Image 1 (tube, rainbow, N blue to C red):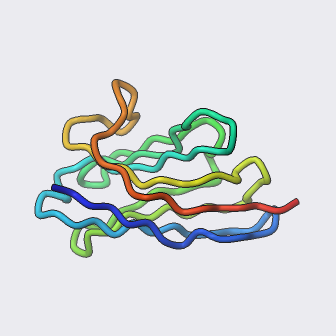
Image 2 (image 1 turned 30 degrees about the vertical axis):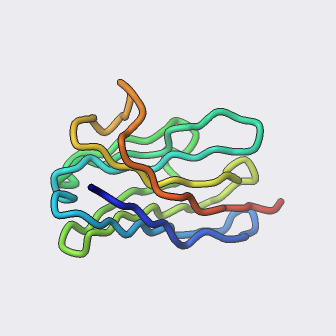
Length: 124
């Protein structure tokens, strides 16, 4: 069983930065593809970023490319999302996700494991 706990959300002005963290419990974390999704009020869930088990491959949603960076530290069981040049449209609940089988695009299906989410609000 894998448990995910996000932190680092908050309120920031447009153009600012935030760093989200995800603490992962579970012995097999280092073999999992990890990522981030987000969901804004009234909108569908959206893929944000994914990272391969060894950090060797990453993938980003078009709306965040060039502004967000995903990383992981397998020794600490942590996943991070560095968010720069934030825009009001980035406002959403951000979820840390993990899956043993999916690739970094998380395209085939929704991942098996989800955190409880952390709110990010970007003011204009």
